[in-house]
Length: 287
View: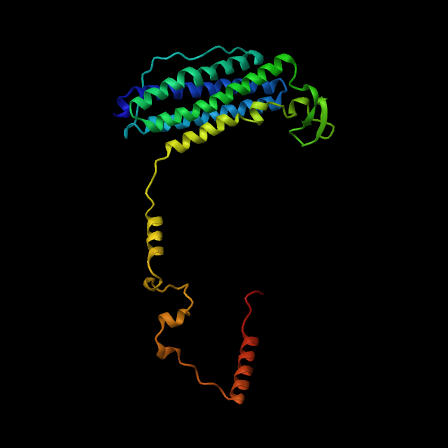
């Protein structure tokens, strides 16, 4: 099936638009967190926004490959979320909901259609993006719960709190308000977000499995040739430059390898003195 005339082509356009909008919404959230002094929280959100940028880039690569000519417009009829207000806590929850919708409902359906229409590489892209969106949902959910419960910088047990600006760290139940070393504010302290620092191992394994399944087996003629060579008797092997015999013996005729006549002791002494005088008079490479 021609990609440009398929439903997958329309779904790619919807996905590209959705990923671009998600990135922009997360940049709004990152901006809000930074304005509140939550520097490390803003960095985590900004990292997810960059993930969404690269998702949109990959989906766009399939769109532009559908036609050698410029694709002027793609008409799509689709709803996109506009839930966010200027409230960081609520926006974290909305972001988790949106990521869950992509991972559980929207992208699995687009993946199914791509497989039915014969676009296995596009289906594989959706399959891998789904695993990442699950991780995004877990991160946003954990950030929301910690911020709501007041446990972003306060834990029930002592943990290591490390300043993201200078690297100073200490063990305590609560993060320092101001870094004792560089005087950075508490927002610069690295947060303890398990979903961010310790991603789901099962999801990572699934992504690796998806990539392995996507790869097609290719013939290896070089290996076959090597096996055939090994099966031949040693006498059939051709001489190579790495053989035990000297290179000169293999490439030079015997008449050119005759030993040179030796000099008399007096002639050797004269030649040595002449060479030394020439070496002393030769110019040096550096001044």
